[in-house]
Length: 60
Image (cartoon, rainbow, N blue to C red):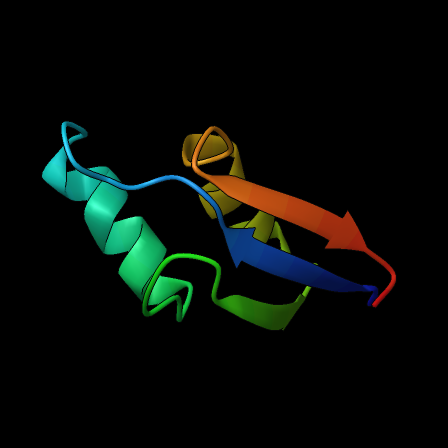
């Protein structure tokens, strides 16, 4: 599978608890923190839910 790089770009203040838990489960600790994941269907689904809070780059 392809690797994707996820960077947390926008605060979760004012967003639902569900979206905060998704950010946490992606392994993001604080703003501008970047993690690398395999592009699995579960990760892609999580990124669709919080796409407005993160920046995703493919192939890294």
